[in-house]
Length: 116
Image (tube, rainbow, N blue to C red; front, side, top):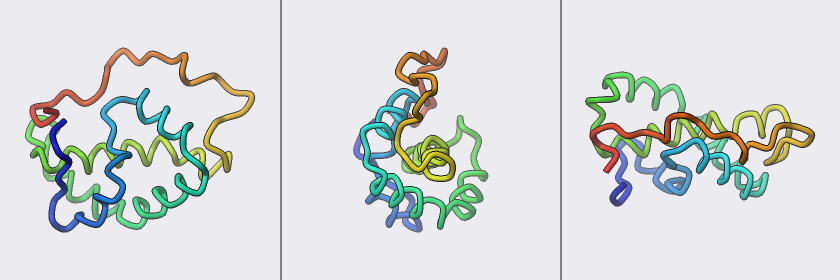
């Protein structure tokens, strides 16, 4: 993906652009490599804007998603990835669980027209 741009009303979320990752494997690796403090910060920033973000993105189909909206959409996917770490486990990795690095999703990530 080219330089990450965000819609003007979500410019503050650009501070979290390193979480805008196209694949589930990348998002899982980012979660596991992050401290709980980093995850908590990202989670809080995204959760505070989630309703607004989803309403904004809902005006487009994935095929129509403008390039500047792709990082915003990817941030919402990262939020889904970190939510269990924050809400249930209070740690970046799940202990005594399936090693997520072994999971190989069939689809490799967002590949729509704005994916770059």
